[in-house]
Amino acid sequence: MQFNVAQLLKESTGATRRYELTESIDGLDEELKFLGPLVGIVQLLRTNSGVLVTGELSSVVQVTCNRCLEPIAAAVRFNLEESFRPLTEVYTGRYLRPDEFEGSEEELEDAALLIDERHILDLSEVVRQAIWLALPMYPGCNWEGSGVCPNLGKRMAELSDLADIELYTDEEGPHEEDEIDPRWAALLKLRSDDDSAKS
Image (cartoon, rainbow, N blue to C red; front, side, top):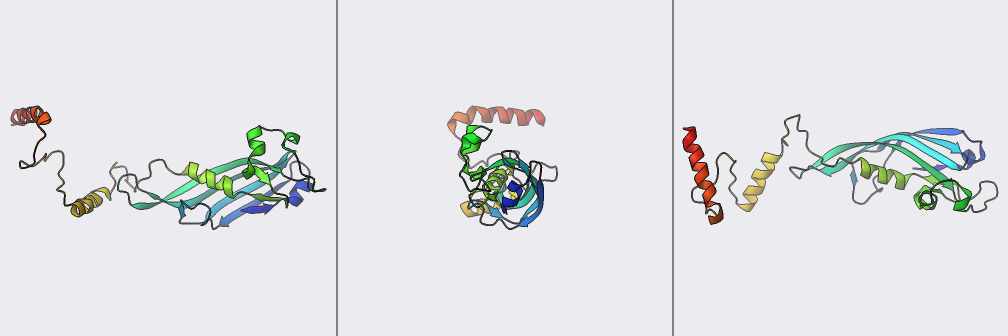
């Protein structure tokens, strides 16, 4: 995701370049496993202080289901809008100081938003951060409106077999042979009163 913008920097304000991307991003982040390429459109716009990058991008990332803890694929879509400033002047090669540009000090000093001395604009860090922000907060299997993860019951059964635990639903309640904590004994009386009222 590197673009040589030397020619664009020589042009007047308002000049643009448009790129369609289909690029592998496997090594972009060690913590993320990408299941597909980065796809989308990026536009570079010459501004009086550098280059404004805008774009609409998407990819597919492997995440963990929030309920069954199985790996699933999550589509991530995001928009980019970042201003990059050149590190050197394109004609003379003179290094440009941050105070020669408009913008917040944080933006002007951010190394991810610099066009290097060879006039290469690198989108890698900006895209990596955007992907993290676009990841779903609570990823889950396709629940199809039921609110229940289809793999959860199967996964719970597998885990109970591994741990040799007997699972029961709320309706079944604990088995008679299970030991009841004496602090909760008073609640059992309420439950038996409720059961007798239903019959």
